[in-house]
Image (tube, rainbow, N blue to C red; front, side, top):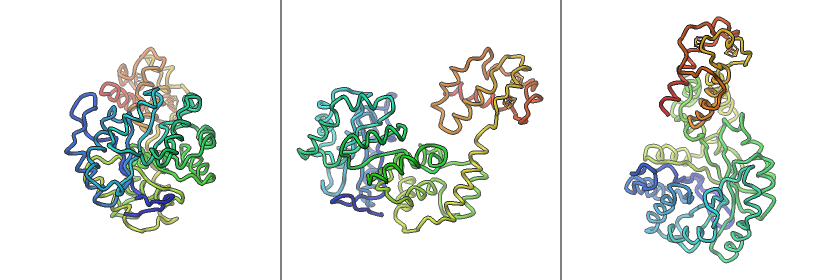
Length: 369
Ligand code: SF4
Ligand code: SF4
């Protein structure tokens, strides 16, 4: 396992995100300890020493699970990161005491202000939370203080400059590097010399399965690499990256990821070019190239707002099914499921799009969410 120095300690470059364990209840608040412990124990035994959790994961049960499992190990052999989320709870003093108890420790190694957003940054800054956490750091109850951000780069910079933070956690992967704001966030943190903890390196698993054509490009270059390992290798190659978190919940996944972070292969410019070629094709095949010209809508007997629904489908394909709620907000007399397949629309479409096929795909996703 690759280890990198951080202040006066060393951290494994791969960290275990403890938010995706299987649970035994419908609310997802009772983690199956036998499965989770097997993953945590395997991680610890194979050199991972950074364990990330939060009170919002499984409504506190993730913290409880991590505390219960790691309790048997030498306290100097691992570091625990947890967070406070103001959207879920306002009483940070009580929460901090509860977290110490759940994690069975007198000191939280890495403590993060959780999920800074453009919409909550003022509340965070005015709440007194960071001053309280700085006091805890001075008392030795927090070793290192940081924050995680899903905000715009400008907000991230504002928050980073507001206090003396030891590290920052951002979403960073090759897709968001090109199409999102990973690159500008990364550059803002590197400029400030703030070590970076990476979350979503495989974009919630979205980059572990590409289209067959783009996967073929990657497989040709390195047949022995898994598709998700390309995403991890991209992140691993960037200077300034301290820890890459992966929410592993089974042993096959953790073994593959540990192998990726145990070799000293240097990701080359050629590898990067191959990855960008695969990404370009993935994006093209993923995206329905509707130009919103609306020629199709004039002929649709079911009055379906076709371009708006295709926009939603693009969003769902790129960013996940949780975006399906946007389909409910489309102003349209006809819904995707109302399409009768008459193909009056396709005859009008300058992009030759198979519109009924896409509407059926969206209707299926909406019906099965
Ligand atoms: S195929 Fe569907 S979307 Fe296209 S015109 Fe007919 S009903 Fe409308
Ligand atoms: S005609 Fe084709 S490109 Fe134009 S809005 Fe309809 S689907 Fe999109």
